[in-house]
Amino acid sequence: MDNELKLFFYKNRRWIYCLEYILYSVILLAIVTYIDSSYSGAQSNIPRIMLSSVSLAKTVLSSLVAALLTITTFTFSTILTVFSLYHNSFTPRSVENFLDKKITMKVLGIFIGGFVYCLVSLNFMEASHDQRLVIAGTIGVIYAIWAAIYFVIFVQTVLNGINYTNLLEEISENTEKLIEKEIEARNFEYVNEDEITKNQVELLANETGYLEIIGFDKLKSLIEEEDVVLTIASSIGDFVMKGSTIAYLSRDVFDYETIEKIQKQFTFTQKRIAEEDYKEGIRKISEIAVRALSPGINDPNTAIHCIRKICILLSELAKVDGHYHYIETDGMARIYYTSKTFKETLVEHLYPILNYGESDAAVLRAIFQGLLLIKVGATPTNKKIINEMSEDIYKNAAQNFHREMDLELFMDVYQEIITGSKEENEIEYEMIIKND
Image 1 (cartoon, rainbow, N blue to C red):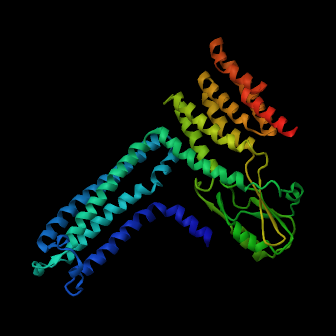
Image 2 (image 1 turned 90 degrees about the vertical axis):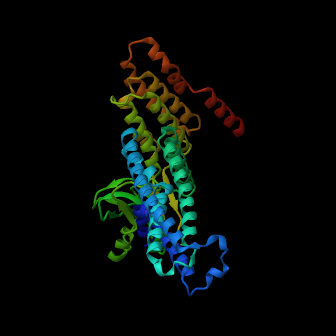
Image 3 (image 1 turned 30 degrees about the vertical axis):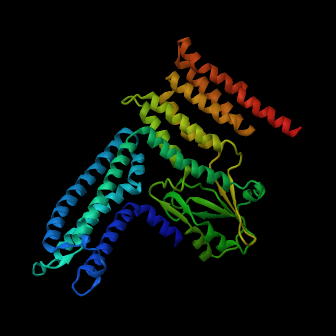
């Protein structure tokens, strides 16, 4: 149930944000209507300055109905324009970063809610009560001022959002938080490689899609009483076909009904969820870099900035070797979750950029500088991977350049990777001193 609620929120959060503020407007309407009713007696506690005649309230609310409807239409048009701009300038999947911002649908909900409030308030005002004082008009004015403030915030958000630097910074910050959680979850002290290889029962995917949510709490309660190892072979974000293997059990100890319950804890979607998968953020930055290097755009500076962001994120993953998570249970059962290895992540996100940028010396220099940055804090195993990748890139890319100046642009950085940078040597020296 928790997985279903989480998935429902991810799928419908844009409309949830919008409907939330429409609901607030309906509640406000109910309160104001009650106060303005002749039998409530609540007006005696309201300052006289807040009250106005019915005729004045009608005039104010009529003007606000037209204004709020116009601004609602304009806001929706602005959202579609920015949607198109993101799609054409960055990458189709970066559109989600704009649409998923709470302010985007929040401001739409505020204006629609204001329109509903003003329209229904007008409908409840009767001509026969023209001498009565009401609060609806004043509340409408306050609501309009509040809506105008949010519209200014929305415009500021749009202006910031169309700047690629701000977009990359936003994606990087969100991805960095997910990477920190990923590294913390890798409990290497408890990982038993021998247990992971003991696979007897295969668990199959019950549908096709991206594996995005795993109900670890429910899994623990289902298997904790048995002395069994559950190894989850697929990573979050992987595309899985129905009937393919997603996990293994070390022993055949569960009945068919329990196996079905275990399989239902793996939730599949038709698109990746960036809040659950750190790789999705890196993938978005990589796609922006690829688009910037495409012949139609040819913007190497944007690509270089993207490469730097990717390498900063990957440098955190390079600090650890393993890619297994150990999930503790209250019983005898053990659960292992398999993440992508550092090499798989590195290849997946840097090689697409190489396809377009291997003939640009400045882009190659940025890639080598990024690899050097990653290598400085990497583990010995990951340093070896970086060296091998650097050699592979150099051998394939060097033949594209016939001018010595182009080769010199990235040759020095490549040599520094192979021989070891000054910072790297200093770190290794400090480690030797500590060990001694």
